[in-house]
Length: 294
Image (cartoon, rainbow, N blue to C red; front, side, top):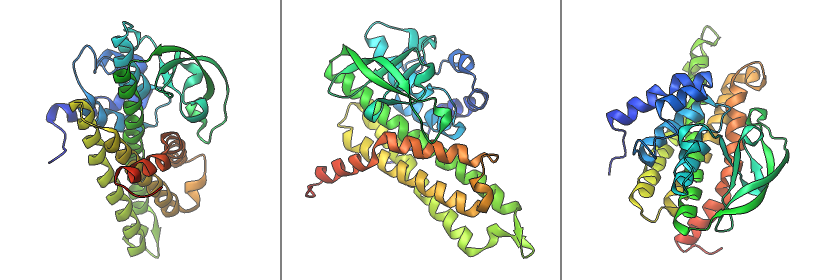
């Protein structure tokens, strides 16, 4: 099976790049990004490439949580504010750590077989300060409908995977541009075999992760047993983004460690999202699925 984008999906992906780069929430709402899976009738396969662009922009807004997780969930419960873009929604991760929770109008907790709203928050410190993260405590039950709970949790995980692929791609693009213009011994450092091999390995990891994300999105759309597909996408995306960050920093040399250069934004976001996506737990779940001993 060939997992590739249609012309319409590619056009939507390209269209969101400008408002994402500008951090333009209203512009995204005007384009129908938050209503994509509700009023516009799009699905997970249409949004996956958009979420990759969210990652590539390292946008400091809860776009994925609002458009991909909250909008379809809340609309099923009779609340259209997320779909309209008038309500920013954050999703709590392990331990209640909630990216973008400081400026969200609603926090969702997706563990314990139910969806709960956040009852209160306290400040949190993360390696990526642009996450504006808080620690949220779970409050009242919003829904215990198994179908809604399962779909929301799967979309939250898949959203992390898609963003991680985008982050990895952005770091690799920056690095390729840098090694082409940085010279040593009279030649671009990108011409050195050691540099080319590292970049090729990082690229290969991302190329394996991207179709896994699309495959998981397809499984969700089709209502298939999507758990293993989502787990696999998260594991591959987290590994690929981590490899891309290591390669990018090493190939940049000392400049890669400085906060004045933009690479750190994407590396820190990738580290933070990978931790929230819990790839270790998902790898263990995959091992159990294929009968490996604990």
